[in-house]
Amino acid sequence: MSMEEGETTGVVKRFLFVNRKAPYGTIYALEALEVVLITAAFDQDVSLAFLDDGVYQLLKTADPTGIGMKNFAPTYRALDDYDITKLFVERESLEERGLPEDNFVVPVTVISRAEMADMMAAQDVVLSF
Image (cartoon, rainbow, N blue to C red; front, side, top):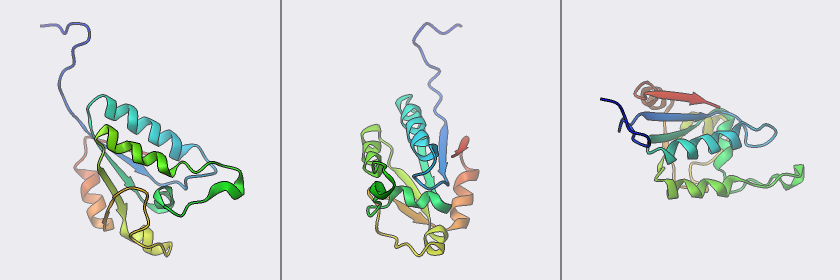
């Protein structure tokens, strides 16, 4: 049986996008967000993980005007429009940077490094930015 044009296989894969880079100074954070939205538009199961310097991407208090950049953190609010609600932040990354667990532009789940590793292992596709 062949697929007709426009049909999909109906297979949903679990995608985890791992954000490890600071939000400004490189294109990684913004590019990751773009790929996340594209993937979600194809009705895939999308989760985001923020660890290392990636935890800075979601901070309410981010203010990049001093470096001449626009704060794109509020763009993460659009994730809900794409039914992307699984956002995870690594507790140890926050602790290592002296950041609180409640200063994010969108709701997140803070999990341990071990829980993050387990979650990564359970995914079909893991993309790191």
